[in-house]
Each structure stands twice: as structure tokens, then as C-alpha cells.
Length: 116
Image (tube, rainbow, N blue to C red; front, top):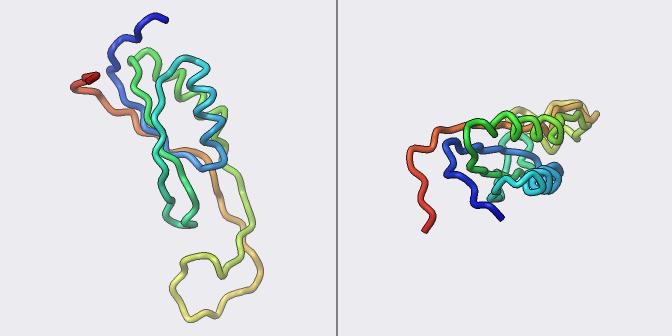
């Protein structure tokens, strides 16, 4: 297998647990290096995964395309009691619809890369 060129960009993708395995599989299948770190989201306190991939600049759009294809935002109904609202407790017992999933992606310049 040919050695990859040194990365010039670090793509940092924060995705839901439900999308992480599919995204990692697709990235690996296309030959992109990946590192996965577990994390927890804020508003709904659901599990997230942060995936890092060091790529050359010309590969960034291909990685972004895979994220867009796999990590869709969805809507779910969540019981109000599970939401972190601060208040007097006078709220409806009906579940509310919230947006979940999708991805947050940062593309950072790599000033230095060293494999030790």
C-alpha cells in the first residue's frame, strides 16, 4: 500500500453515535485515516463521537461529501421532563419535537505533522 502524503488539513467531525460507525466505515473504505473519540453533546446530553482525519487539502471536499451523505439531521419526539430546562415545572406533559443528528465539522490547517 502506498504511503499517504503528509496531511495539510485536520477535519474534525462531531457526529451522533448513531451515525459514527457508518461514517468511519465510509472514510476507511475510501482510504482516509480516522481516529474516534467519544464525547457527550450539550442540549440533549446524548452520546456523540468526534472523528479526526488528517487529509491533504484536495481531499477535504470528498470527506465533507461523506459527512453530508451519512450524517443527516433528524427530528425526534422527546419527553419534556428529560430536557434541561430551568423553570417552575409548569410545562406540558406532551413530548416535543427536537432536531437531532447531523454533524458539526471543523477544518483546521496543519502547521506540523509528525509520525513518531
